[in-house]
Image 1: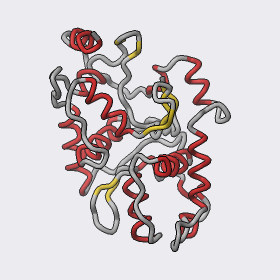
Image 2: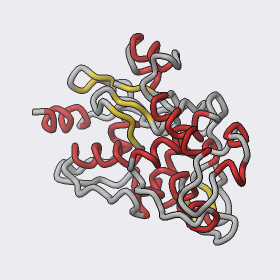
Image 3: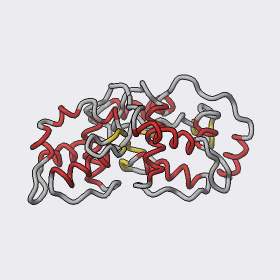
Image 4: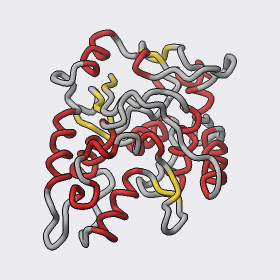
Length: 248
């Protein structure tokens, strides 16, 4: 029924959105209040774990703080990812940057991209950029990544033959099953979703959308995920960072 309702809703698509609107404003007042209060925001359980991990050296290696100092020095970092790695020129997201640091600078194994420790570190780094505008580089290697991400965003997928844009642009603000369809911005990740009862990555949310249109989900480390994340970051340029966001 939900898939049929989604298809019917999208048959009459309205105009694309103009100015970016955070999904924060599509949540109810109780959810917004939860995000606004650090003592009530469940995402801060992971933030605190990430702050502890920042200070703790891995076996045989050195802590993040050993190179970067206090985690407050990370202010602005999450707002500019995905970005090209200065050493290799390869585009990476924040999780990819964390794993590069672990492998190159900490002599530590890479973390599972959606494991608890990675989400905690990403949340702890991300919260340092709260309130700053999302702004990624669009030149160099990032130009082609962003272009591929936009193409994916506008490509029809799955058995329902729907694109991300048909929901999150053409029908943003409409309702599906009683819930407001958001514009689908990525400025609050990692975020705590009440439906998950835990914190999760943007990749997890994208997989849920792909499953919803009955498409084959991309793996968390697939290049398509990075491409979509880069396009979403550009599409939401100027939105304030909200990590860790809270959503229904």
